[in-house]
Image (cartoon, rainbow, N blue to C red; front, side, top):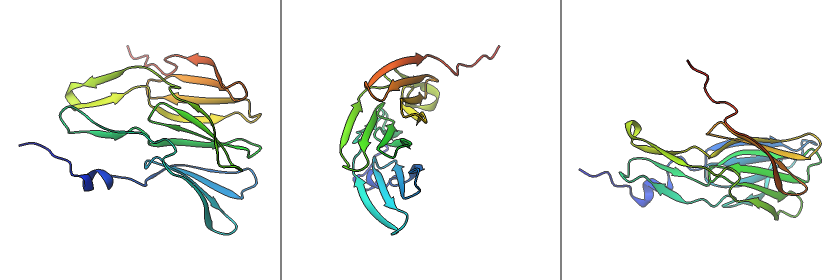
Amino acid sequence: GKFVLSEDMISHHYLGTITSIVLTSDDKYIISGSDDESLKVFDLTTKQQVHDFEDAHGGKFVLSEDMISHHYLGKVTWVAVTSDDKYIISGSHDKSIKIFDLKTRELVHHFKKAHEGKSVEYEDLISHYYLDMITSGTVTSDNRYIISGAWDGSLKVFDLNTKQQVHHFEKSHESKNV
């Protein structure tokens, strides 16, 4: 028999799971990231949602050749806010980092392939794992650098002002097993 995914199964599979939450430094706003590719901003005082960055990472749906596993590549994996509450920064399984202006709600910059690498097929698991998917990140307290980590164990440092990568710690968490 064949495994077939219906449109309903695709659209309801874990969508909406919150993957990251951050507060602004004044504790006024909650920003959440989700595996439905969105970022949402909530006002903690009024208890209302004030903005929805729908499809913030607008990824694509990918099926393995055997149609057994699938991933939403636009899944937001981490969210950070600069200490001056000016920017929301988010990373995603689509290998990108995006910077949004919190006040204007506009996209300021898009590091399209912040962690570019290779995909590896693990035959035993019958699924594809994209080792360069961004899994975590942060912003330095002086708002100078964005630091992101990926599934491949690498860390990358980006200058927030120049929008350039300034360092790559390759295999920073490579196994030392003997």
